[in-house]
Structure formats: C-alpha cells, structure tokens
Amino acid sequence: MTQCPFHHPLDLDAYREGMPYAELTALRAQGSLVWFEDEKSGKPYWLAVKQDALDFISRNPSLFSSPLEGP
Image (cartoon, helix red, strand yellow):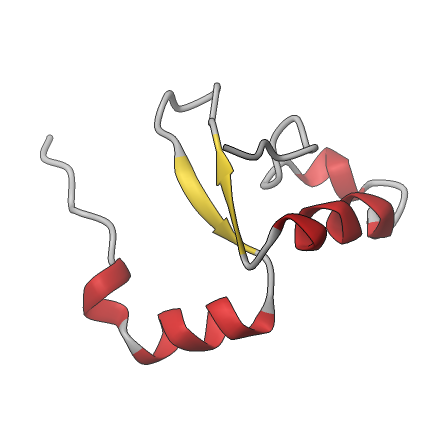
C-alpha cells in the first residue's frame, strides 16, 4: 500500500511555512485515497485527497462514518 509523505497530515506544523504543495501533489499522484498509518493514535485510516473521492464520500456518509467509541 502507499504511504503518506506527511509525518502526520493533520499536524498543523506541516502547514507552518504555508501549504505543502509538493507533498499534496505527491499524495494525489498515488490516487484518490491514500492509506495512512497514524502512529499517534495507532488507528490507520484512508486519507481522501482528490475531488472525486471527496464527492463520493460526501454523497454516501453511511458508508464512511467512523464507528463511535465507547468510554
């Protein structure tokens, strides 16, 4: 599977110097969805990086909603 070039794509430090256009371009070159191993949470997930994936997910929320975690 592909790997995300960000250490953590949700980390605001990745955007401190502005938009990381080169990294985002590399992600989009891998496809509409990129598998990301989140070391911080230990929970991997798919990262939607192209408009077609975002549109499909937005139109089908019941297919893509995360399960609620209990206390």
